[in-house]
Image (tube, rainbow, N blue to C red; front, side):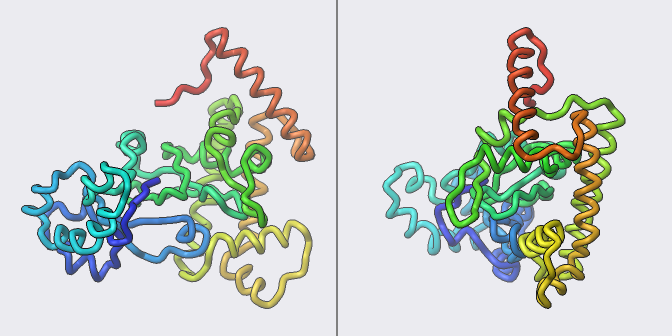
Length: 301
């Protein structure tokens, strides 16, 4: 995701209105909702980011003078102290605006994200208008089939084994180790449709419960889910989270999704984590050999 290099890029909805959002034509394309890892793991702050990627400085001055002054006073002094010339010279634009990622997301209505470093490996959809922070790993697909496979126990076991760990029970999702070598199942249309359907239900459930209970975070929901799976007794606060997040239903949705993904691989759900890893590693080797022979099951757009 984006690396801003300037706290002044972040604004509240009230500040955005004062800068002309809803009044200045076209500004809605440049002041957009913004999410970081904490927004996803806990609950969204509701902030926006000023994203002037693609605009020359003179164009910002003439079209959005209030925005220009805001950044001139709040971002430029910080950027002037930066050692990198490109950051100093282009102070009105994010330090790392992610041109490649923007091209990948073009035309999509939503995309898949996961927090790079998090206790629980959770994947969810974000609307295309939302700008992701650099601590979010973003996957340019709006297909719930991909969300479903990534959310399955099979992929989570792989990701926890392949990714790093910063210590303190905070696994890291390294895209070159966790995502790129991961072998997706070779599904038929019916299997793909079932995974897609169950992933949509899972994503909708979490979003619905968080909308009903604004303070409900994904980390809280998955802490309770973990205790349910372990058969542990919930404390009073956890019982509240259980009821707000409908955690028993969340568990059932994950179980149903896992059943569909295991079936797509043709594997029994009774496999241990080590057996899953052994089979995925073998499947990865098969895919490597297939590609050497010209059989490409997955080609990036």
